[in-house]
Length: 351
Image 1 (tube, rainbow, N blue to C red):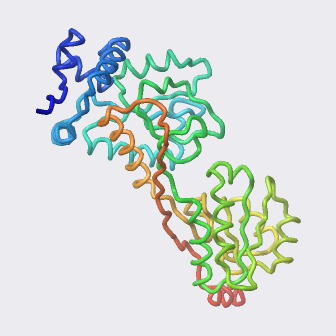
Image 2 (image 1 turned 60 degrees about the horizontal axis):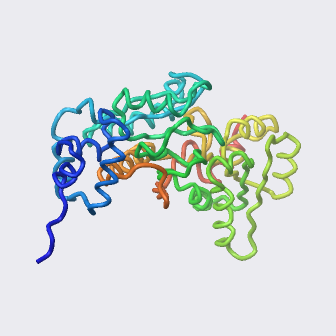
Image 3 (image 1 turned 90 degrees about the vertical axis):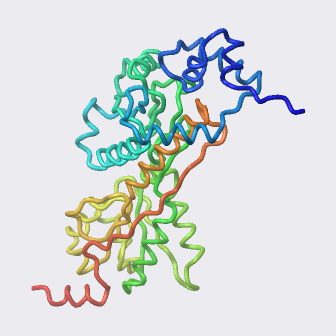
């Protein structure tokens, strides 16, 4: 006859604590001392305890059906220049709002927590998180190579986007490697035939080299005899842009960011879209001319929160051995871009 599967009570009896204490410890409840949590987890591993997935699903359902409890907290960790700097950045604010909505749907609070204080230590930051009852961390976008003062082993974590380089966590992000082929395809549909790409090494690094990957994908799919000219510059000058446009007879540009490109084009007498097409991959400001590949903030925020909650339900903490990346396709927004033939006629009729 098979032996009975170990339960929370089995662990409680061995540890000399209540079943409720075991349950809280396995969920990394900050009310349970760290040493007690570690001892209980060790006992759970020794006896071969495995959570019942049906019970976990039931508890999640109950959490969704009732008002958010103070003990069910996730932290939205950011490290910009000040505690409230993120609120002034539209994409950051939108990411938080979408992640918060998903967390609330699943029965959790999402609390903004600033990790940018240069005097902050990992021990002190852990104390801040525990004092707020934080069980899991949603990591906001960071500057390149920024290190966060987090003792990762205590928390379930996932990152918004791919800017966090260390440690490698589960994350959800735009499928940037698909943005260049998508933009190229849309431009071709609009009649553009000489399409070029502009980005910097910094842009490429920030999206985990996906811009270079996107160019490689598109080049492998080009019709015979066609090329995809690429201009890689850290600080693009007027002369460099003019020479590149003339040499390659470019009639449309795919660029990481658009502000500087638009300014240089205007300085050379080229208007978007009347004289040249433009698609921005990382700029989403409505006042910019041209088209965009928009990031789906709602899907990215929701997926990141789901990654954190999934770890909590499985009692997983710390840096994952095999990080998962959920890739969300970008959305095409034509903006004021029009077919090349229409754009040319508009340009010719301009005073």
